[in-house]
Length: 244
Image (cartoon, rainbow, N blue to C red; front, side, top):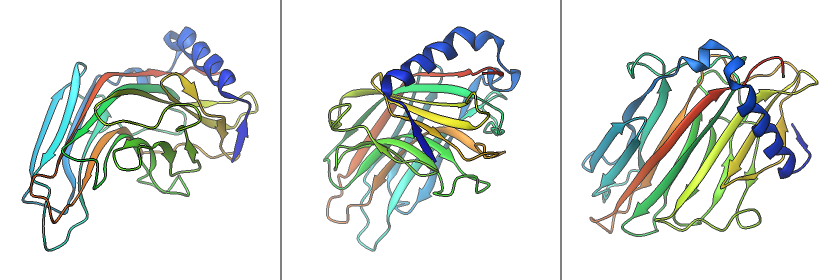
């Protein structure tokens, strides 16, 4: 993994993507919907989950009563991009270059235990050495952080302020090919960019992996009112063309 240049360079890359989007591949441009999958983690089955899919307007994921005295880690609700009207998740291929973004608001009954929401690139085929690629905000540590896969980068507190529950933050992820032929990822939070993460030669994003967002809430055995809510708005994904 190599980190290249600075956040100003990242902004220039994204501006270039936007100007060329109309020339890109049909695969990513066929995405027309999302599929919502409730309770991918269902460790507290007695909680009340509510999922609303109003894409492209908004997606709402909430959980209430996440409290179980006999253990259990967390509940997680997930949505993925789809190109068949929301019947199945779109399976990204190594050459499906894209730029995706959304705004997310994370609210809760209390900041602890942890609630988190953000991007999820599910690594179904072992393409990412660190497992699923995630880019999230959370309630207890107030992080704005990207981790998993090949990469790790903390946006807060140096590039953006620590996340405050109830506020809106815009997150973005782009996957593209560099002039040297290697693939790369670039992440952004409220218009601030991390260094570009260049993947090793011949490595891509994993044929069949799925991209979307998620909300997760940890169990609180002492608080029956433990609840949280994530709303995703302004969801966008555009293809990035080749050759770059």
